Figure 1 (cartoon, rainbow, N blue to C red):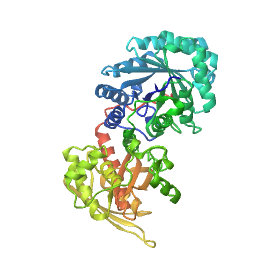
Figure 2 (cartoon, helix red, strand yellow):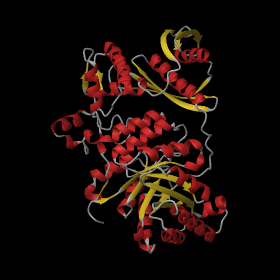
Figure 3 (spheres, rainbow, N blue to C red):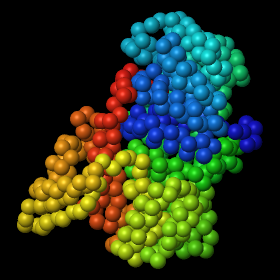
Figure 4 (tube, rainbow, N blue to C red):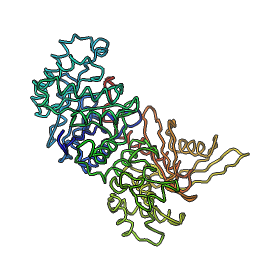
Length: 519
């Protein structure tokens, strides 16, 4: 292994990550995530699976048009119509890649594909050759490679490289591998595929047994030079290898791996929050690298050590991943320019209209809180400044609740300049609020998930609420923040309502077709 070999980062947040149930993003959100990934220095962005729907095709196409510094990949099965769709969607890309896949494990060949081994080899070769008609950069993935018979896997890899594949990806599709075994698989591929030096070995690991990052790193140690991963580790079932963990492990333990990436690590936390916001998946406080507690110390012994010398208990600097901590930044006497400046330092740039909205919310919050922290500012932007047309806005809220009375609410919502009022009762104050909102908007929402967490510390901390709601089969997420958790809950629900209203007006995109396929 050469010292400081570069490991390419292939991010599949927009494709495999979005396959996580409830993680669907619209076209604008996908583009914003892609721009964040480009800002990070991601080498390859897998933007979607173009053949699966018009919406996926359009998302890949717009990402291909707008992103200039990263290679844009589109996924395709080893059939012509998939490859045609990927090629067409990727036409505007400065650098495009067609990523074709075909299962090679005995269980998939016999039970899913119902083909002979020779037919599988021919299908793989034909797919790569066909893709090369459109694109020089073709990647091939033998799906379920970690459970494939090795000699057959070597044969397939040799033939697709001959056919023109520049990258061969070795997926642990069902998260079955363990690090020693998976590292050995990569080692054996390097030593048994005669033309392997003509392709980059990539790895794509799932987290069903909690070993996706460990497996990926074992593969790097044994010669893999591309890792496929997602922000926050989101993805099918238990998720994918977490990009931030892979990147920081290679950086922090360069002495062991002898490898580096081109990722601008100071963008990690910012991008993590963006993906969390758009998918509605909250990041666990104890999540490595990007969790809220990742750089916080409660133990007195740890606090004493960190104050004397940070490296006693911190193997990474918080600022290296863009962790902002709990620094007090602004107060109620601060002006709009100060707010804009601090947001820019946090990596958030708003247009004039968004800044006005954020400033109004900031002034309101600073009247309620003694201290306004960086996390409060980020929550304001995430919850209040969103590019979703406000069909319905909260005008006022009155709640009557107690231990021996049935909760009752009166809600006023504003729409098109007119105020609508409804009262409702429910099992609790939040249930009553949501019933009143449904009555006003005439949209019946079914609450699927509800989560609340404190944005900062203290009794006056903001509560950030995230909800997932089903409106007539359309699942959307919403986010809201306030020092009043009931108000935050209503704002989150209204955010989901407004997304549902916007979705009804934009039903042009075809619904996704579930092919039952994954890597």
